[in-house]
Image (cartoon, rainbow, N blue to C red):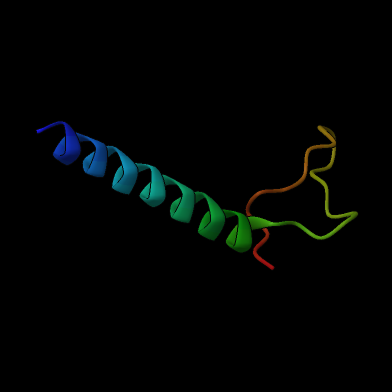
Length: 47
């Protein structure tokens, strides 16, 4: 039972990591492409 719980936790963590990496690849903004006014990197500019 403990092993099953550990497996489920591990797979969930891998899913989150994979999702984060995919999102980062999709939304990395090039240098200089910052939102006017706020100075934040625009997250809606896919590479």
